[in-house]
Amino acid sequence: MLFSTALLGAAVALAGSASASASASASAQTEEELELLAKARAAYPICAQKCMETLIPESDCELTDIPCLCTNEELNLQIAACAMEACTTYEGLQTKNASMTMCGAPVRDKSMEPLVIGMVFGGLALLAFILRMCSTLSSSGRPIGADDYMAVATIIFATPPTVFAVTLTNNGLGKDMWTLPLQNIVNVLRYYYFGELFYFASITANKLSLLLFMLRVFPDKHFRMLVYAVGGLVIAYGISFIVATAFQCSPVEWSWQQVDDEWGTGTCNNISMQGWMSAIINIIIDIIMLLLPLRNLWRLQMQLKKKLMIMFMFSLGVFVTIISVIRLHSLVLFANSHNITWDYSEAAWWSTLEIHIGIVCACLPAVRHLLVSLGASVLRSTKLTSGGSGTYGSRTGAGGNSSVVKGGSVVHTQETPKRGDEGDFVPLVEHPNHKAFDKQSAYSSAGDSNGHGADSVYR
Image 1 (spheres, rainbow, N blue to C red):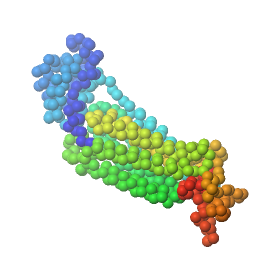
Image 2 (cartoon, rainbow, N blue to C red):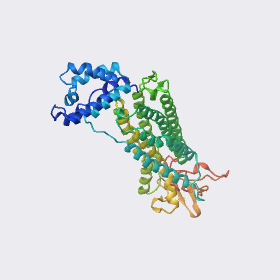
Image 3 (tube, rainbow, N blue to C red):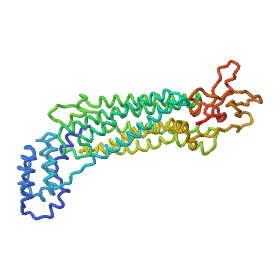
């Protein structure tokens, strides 16, 4: 985000719109106006004072005419051009701050937005994760799987962006940058840089957690190959943009030191384009993952109401996709910003919101399992027999045993799952470890091409 030159040009322009009330007053100097002029003169850096002392006498304004100084656009442009050559970036910000104060511009502050959103939704994400892990603790709990370990990684990567909601607010995010000390601006850019790295790491880990959950749920080989392919895409996405973000500027420190002209020099990639491409690819992957399980879920043999409830639970990720789209819009607006601590506020909290809502959505199936085990029968799925074909079908007998009919003969299978798997969604028929067992006669709703054999779905 190389914005130093453009930022300086925008910052030194005097705030004409802020002077509406001042221009209504008479040109005669009051004590209040003289005091404002004295404060402004003390606040302006020497480089800007020299520009004004040269250019104002050549204009229609007097050195003490505040309404004219605030509304003369031609004069402001001339002062801006002069200051770009004579002042550093931060001196330009000091000039902007002095002008805005002199012209009576309101002091803006929306710093509580990223703080409140980060803390509230960060707390919800943590609660969902704790409930997820609690679902593995009881004697009837589900066994912990690879998706749970990846969820732990997601929480670890999501913690710094959540904490940064506090540190960014403390350093002035949500305020006009010309009102902040130079070190605060540098700190905001530093936290922004590291926040982006952890953002990519956390959303990548969360996507992998969801894909590992799908592998745990659906035994269909073709479907699993698709999941592996999407997983490879997710890993490539995460690695690519973590590396691209880490080395977006040379030297790396230039990512946050670019507002300090005394620090040195550096170069950066087109960071705006990089951010847009990452957001677009992220949205595409989200859409693919949303559509991936729907066909298998629709083929589940259960009551329509329960089926729609499960499909709805899998589709809650659409909220994350919507947030990603809104975040992309905020990044587009942020690309042309000359006031980063004010304009980045929205992009910052949309990013943390995407992380937190993604964690909540990924934990919902396990949370549902926990609630069902605690007696929430309304969330329990009914067990149905499947028999939509004359060739294939199944029936469930006492004791959890099922019979699968194939070619007129009945093959008995034991449906009792391993400990904890009884609530684990769709791998529906446990294959007994017995040589005489014909594994081809066991069908799951996800694996059978006709969608039959769903004897134990989302209990």
